Image (tube, rainbow, N blue to C red; front, side):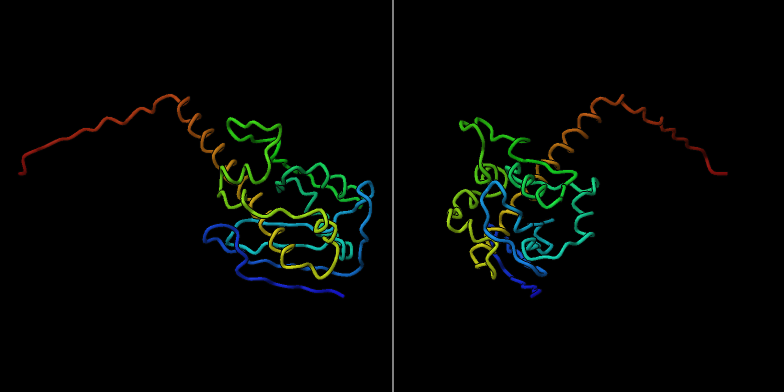
Length: 203
């Protein structure tokens, strides 16, 4: 049975609250072994001023518009440790054309671990709140396809999506700003027009 649930005021960090929309369509997926697992939930965020969309793929009919959206190279989708996500999407013939793995694109300065966690990166770039957020347990991970999702799952998925967006947005803005400043430094100095002033006696 199709549903759409909305949640207001889901805490992200500090005073940031998220508006979350959780929706699906029909049929269910089962909890399958990792080797054959299909995607259950797609989390989409474009910032705190817009609702976070939690699209329940495991209970949705095939949507060509959504498929084309993921495959459109004009959009960048940022995630964290996305190799498993890509494999699960491939099992249902879904492809994300422009998928960025933040874990591979940015490192915490003076990092001592082989790979940074989402909490490590968000703690540096957004708020240490994410680093202290209670992790989803193995048992909870098995219930992403169990409907209705618990509020714990709703909150975790929403914060995860928002954090990934906010991190990549800040990294991108910083890179663009540095690139723009470098280009300005490399440009030859602009010649200023000579000013001329004249005075004359009035007749």
